[in-house]
Length: 198
Image (tube, rainbow, N blue to C red; front, side, top):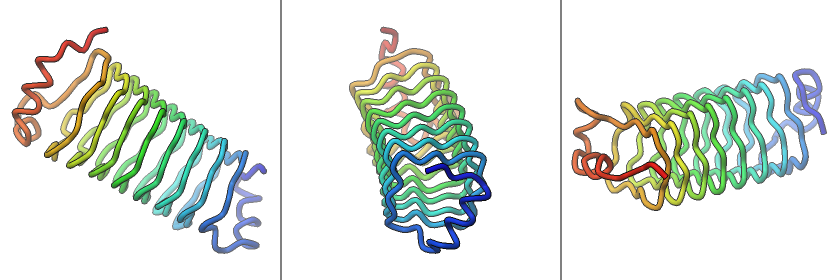
């Protein structure tokens, strides 16, 4: 199935409620989504290209083997969504809710995540390169067994009870001074002692 700006509107008119739908091998290209709902939807090996999404609900959705290229997500809801073996390239996510989302064996390349609630989210066995997590909330979240290269965590905070273990990589930028560094000073002092270079 191929969904672009025109045929998506027709598809949406036929199926007004897209919640709990299955989208297998779908190509979603050059489309703007606003106030759509994919609550509990399943996406399998689907491709998202140049998608602009605003105020859209992806909560409890499952994405397996999906690719996201040049996509923009603003004020969207990914609460308890699951991403497995997905690839994000040159994407941005801002002012969104990714609370309790799970990213397993995913790849982030040149992706910018800013002002996102990532509390209790889990990123595991993933590869993160040349990406940014700016002004994000990480309370009780976990980044484990992942490869991080040239990743910027500046201005992110709420590192309370965050689990950060088994990771490797280099050029990790984290809060050095000011309020954001002091929200969990002991955590960042410990991080600075780690030899990240492989």
